[in-house]
Image 1 (spheres, one colour):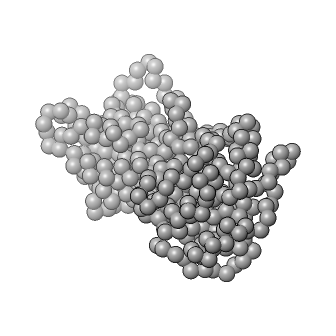
Image 2 (cartoon, one colour):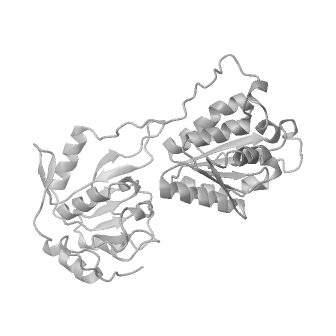
Image 3 (cartoon, rainbow, N blue to C red):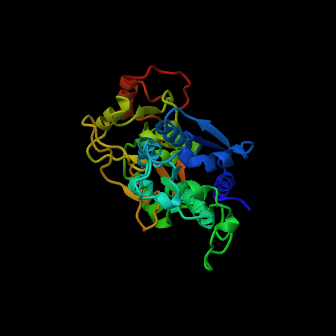
Length: 367
């Protein structure tokens, strides 16, 4: 029968995890052994500091869209993960943190490195559990993976040293805890706006004379559609931080990023719109004002982007105005006229927007 650590690593493999970042220590010997015996299926990358492991797991999650996993021992090993995990929390990256603990009967007895990491991690996580025994691990390992991926946040499992090596047959399973009742997979439905919301967005867009596009991570994986939309709308594209990979910075349609880490053309873009002109926005709107830019939204129809457990939204995709034409019978965009005169000064000044038919690159303004 597998032990708790082996159940955990096997669960990670089932959730398509192929790499774990961490630093070994006495508090996670059982997990390290499970990784060693499964190194043909899952790779362990050792770091020099636990903070690096958390940042690497976060970067891995952002880059691949898969679950990032980091590992640390008890006490200060676990607390060192926090900085990288807050990066994952604020950027909504799915990350699982695994930490060791003292022997189960020495917790809260002032033993060496006796830190209650479940309390420490409470603020940074959306799922946070102390594993009681091997039968408990069957349930919470899968729940931790699913929570991090579905909630776009940090999950944490804390496991006592001796519990890691406890065999499943030695665990005292309650009558209600049926074996293998938690599936190791996640099914996502198609999240589409209602027909009425699409019609509202179309009316708003039809009433406008100018349009710009602000993209966030909601546009990841939709580059072709974004480029086609920008071409049809003759619209410049600014990028929120999490939408930076959607288009390269030297793309002829983009003005670069927004905010304090952005490029100069993007905040200047707002000056080319009259007070009641509006923009097309596809972002969770996680940017903050930096003092050198104005709010990019005057009036918008809102479409939910990512529903949360309690019926709230972690972000909204806001769709606002443009001068495009909309075919209601076919529900498709009709190409507008060539680049309008109002956009010409922007092309000349910032060199960031090009003729959709032109392949000539232009110098970028501001980095």
